[in-house]
Amino acid sequence: MTIRMHTVLILPLVALLAACATPTFDPLEEARTQYQEAAGDPVVTQNAPVALYEAEKTLQKAEDAWEHENPDRAEHYAYLTKRRVELARARAQAEQAKQQAQQLAGQRDEILMSARTRELQQARLETREALTAVEQARLEADQARSELERSRTRAEDLERQMAGIEAEQTSRGTVLTLGGDVLFEFAKSDIKPGARQNLDRVVQYLEEFPDRQLRIEGHTDAIGPEPYNEELSRRRAQSVRTYLVNQGVDPQRIVTEGYGEQYPVAPNESSAGRLQNRRVEIVMLEPGRAARTAGRETERATTPPVAAGPPTQQEGAEEEQGSMQRQGEDSQQQGQEPMQRQERSATPEGEAQQQGVLQEEGSAQEGSADTPQ
Amino acid sequence: MTERRWRGLGPFGPFGVLVAVAALVACAHTQPPYEILSQADLAIREADQAGASRAAPLPLHRARENLEEARAAMGDDHYQDAELLAEKALADAQLASALTEAQQAEDELARTRANIETLEDEIQRSQEGMSR
Image 1: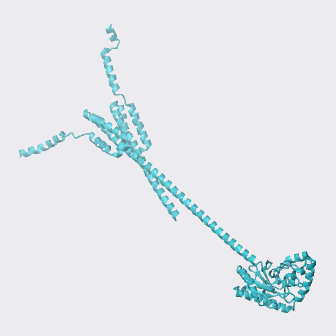
Image 2: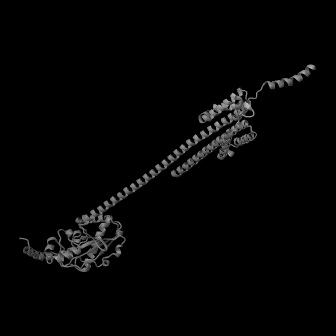
Image 3: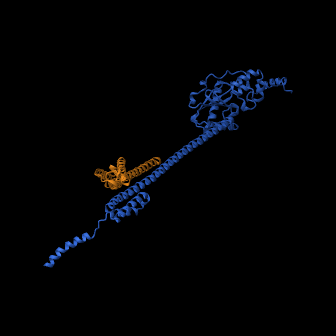
């Protein structure tokens, strides 16, 4: 029992002694640990070396004071050490954040720059595309223009070709005049085989203007009874129509008319005039004008009065029909000469008698004029 | 001759002089720590102006406490204590300033980061707009 009592008394005593024997209070412990942690942290050593150095010096002062048995001072410097270590950490953090912000700012500038560059490139690309489009359009316009030029040239070529057939602009439209003697035998309405070439050129010309309405008008000279002439001129016009239709011209486009001797283009007193009057006219009406309502009767009175005297240049059969205007001028200029010329070129059938007389007259005149015969 | 000279030194004689010198020396060692006090005071003001009351309220508070205690010690002529307390206040105030600066740097970093994200978003959108 006594032993037990002793142990009960001894245990607290031992505990008390143990507590006293270990004067574990070390005011520097915390400061040391904090400093060592900071000193081992590369973020702090790299970003706040000066502050860390100050903390170390302070810690050293604390250690010195502790060694010199000055716990108050040691505690004081330990306090300062802890603040300075914290300060070093704060400095390091600030420094790091600033560096990162700077880096990010650089990145942002790069992003902005590259975005601007991209925008610029995009804009440049769009400009280039637009320019290409403009270039393309210009090219197409050029092509269209040269196309137009070509077709115009072609039309001009054709017109030049048609010159032999005599194309003339009138208020009704383009009038192609075909010499009656070229197309038909005397008093007949069948087209001569040799005239087909001429008509084919007409067909070719008409094909260039597929939207135009056509009037085919037959005319005769004043020889013979009028009803007969009218009938003949109508049949001849129809003959031409038939030929054109056979060559592929749309019959809907064509209206025929026989005018007989109603509309002479030259005086019927001379054989040359009569030759001119025997003709078929193909009127290519202005676009939109209907053939049925564009008869000769409707033509404005622009036709000069038929003057006495044939045209001057009558070298071939096809060139016999000069324009009326030219004819008018000619007759004024040339006075009595027409007879002689006319007889030289024109050889109309059924006028042999007259021709003979004229020939005599003509040779007499010729002899007296300039031919040393 | 020598006696007359000592007399001229005052009623305490040579001993009195010694005591006075000793007292002066002692006083010189524990002069009031005005400089460190004003340094601490200034550091606290600076930390406060920098925004430490929000970014580092505890260190700022400790700095003020320590400065108060230092002034109290001054009032009691405990210059030694006053100096140490002022030194603590200064360290606390400097820490408060550094923490405030760190906080501000972090804020700035976050702003820059957000800024870049917005920028990237905008660029993304404008590119989508372009390619559309």
